[in-house]
Length: 317
Image (cartoon, rainbow, N blue to C red; front, side, top):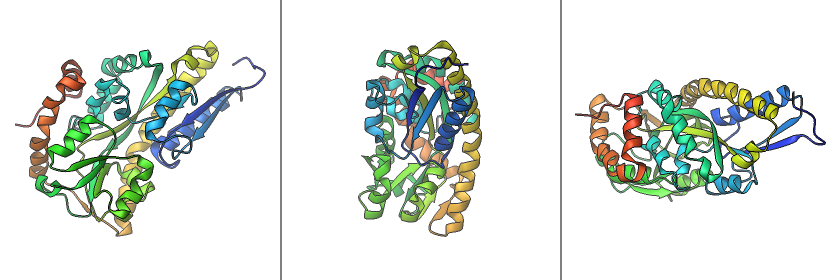
């Protein structure tokens, strides 16, 4: 039990997606568990939908101590200088969810978290949010279909290289600005997971979706290290236990939520959903494999090889 201070310990937990997404629900579950287990001695304030900070600003806010916790997507650590995390953006590196978990739940995941500590950040957990799909206002079946399309990406050199390898023009943009940019034609298409396509209504402004499963979206639940180190031991124990349980919950709902989101998108009739044939996926893979080689100097050959080994990655023939 946390000894009652004069006032409760307050943790501001900021994120950029809707409350009814796997990440949003995971953050809410964490809040409930912490407040219940600490009997109100620790209070978690969740700020969804970029209420406090947009994608670019939130990590700086965490480092400055303006917020205590975030759950950014793994691509966000590259611009911070921890480029090893961009290994998670390599196209087709994970064949399934088990391959992804083998990396994050094992030594590779822990090793990557340790690289955040010099930046004043402590990694607590990886939250999985499933596989990326592609969308545009034209069908995306073949690599040639991407030529000249302006595709929104998160700020990641790997994702930039991925879109260029497909012949598209990558456009870095905050998630909160995406719907309007697609609606007005500032960008032609995007990649992301079904639950975000649904909750942000992306499907309303995109005529075609391809279930490419080319990338994988995941988040790191992180905390300001100085704040964490300054907490009483019993408070840290409650937080560790609660994040562990919230992680099991968030990971379990991610697959369900993405499946349900796709069904709802289908039912809307606003967009055409296409499942690529194996030969088409092989064509995409061949076009995208050079990105792995190209990124060795940036992400680190040793990191890429460690992920290959843990994930059981086999390059296409």
